[in-house]
Image (cartoon, rainbow, N blue to C red; front, top):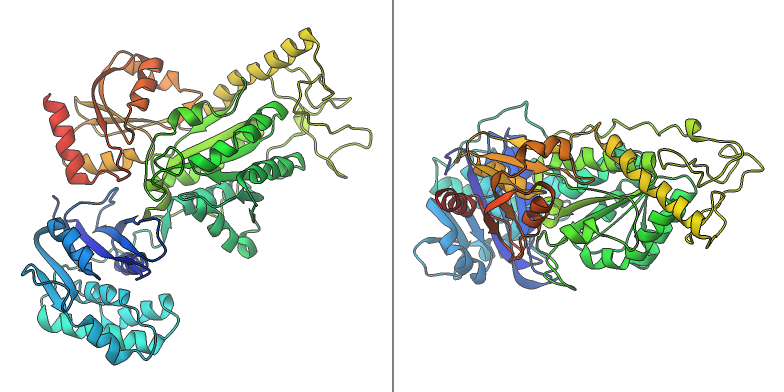
Length: 559
């Protein structure tokens, strides 16, 4: 693997601050001119179990983590045993004194130093931060500053404990392990994929976000709630998924841009509301962040099993938009695009992603203040106003209750039953046909509307052709540093971008996805008659480490 990549692994029990330690190390690396990619592996437990965070650090953009770590800090015996085989050549693996007799693991007096420097609760996670700082040439003053910023309780005790660990490592390893070459021009702020999605929706003019917490979508709700005073987006924790989607549709009825988010189980409960949005032609952004199922499944892990679930969401026939971000930058831009498209076409839109992108973190620049102007509705008004007026485009006039939004004699009526142009219910055969034909005409309008955005992405060169979607593209882009191949990634899945992908009709390709059935491969065969040479599948809830994916690609290329 590349010597430019420095891989750090922090392991321990839930509640020991494993993820926090990795995040602070990531912040330190970024402040010292490095790119980072962090991902977290954790069980659905508040206390106990085994958690670990992986962090890849480099002076070039990194898209994925690696299985072999250069620095490992284990806070308990389970972590030591679990990660002994994850040590790269020349790796340093630290633990607490008494936790291991393995010669490959280096004991440190973590507990003894905690007793010496803390009067009350102690932060063992700070030891990992101090070890990293000492081994990577980061000054003690820089370490102290970040401790003050990130650990705001027991500041003096924290600093004293970290300084003791720092001095111990400096004494034993005066040459350090890694030099961080400062690059001041790199992006200085870290974002998770869910944070990028939240900020993108905000940039698209989001007013209200509704959700009922379900990993891995939960942090969108939490992040937007923290932004309430600075960004003006209302984040509402509803009493259920059913309430969330119906409240979001109610907000759209009142003229406010709204979104909902959940994972597969929660989104299954939203299906009736999604169909309601299709019938009443509500502009609604839905964020579906996948994890392995069915039912509760592996609730804190990643998967791409919900492809056809998203494509066929809701009952009945109506136009919808489904798209999946292939990067953190795209997560931001796509959230804004889909919110705009939902309003332009008066159709529900789904941003389909998965835990690997939602909860992983990188440093990047986001134009968070580049707000999209609201779409003008004036060109769509007709007199007299009819909510479901039959139009050539299938998109009808849209007004909202309230002074300044409609005339006094306008009737603002949305109806979940089949209806005539005014919104009044009907069962008349010819009216049902006319209204369904109107809604079906939206499909071509949606196709035209999506064409102003980037609908597919291509990466790399080479004879070998690989298809993927979503965050799997990130894993493959890291593998491209070691293997030459062409990677094609559809961003928009519905409507399918035939124009951009027509050159691949009948092509032979390898397809990589996180599912036990080759769903995406079947999708490509249906749409493009792609000849599948090999399906590379992973369905244990874990992402592909770079080394593992390289090996599987080599085997597929040579088959």
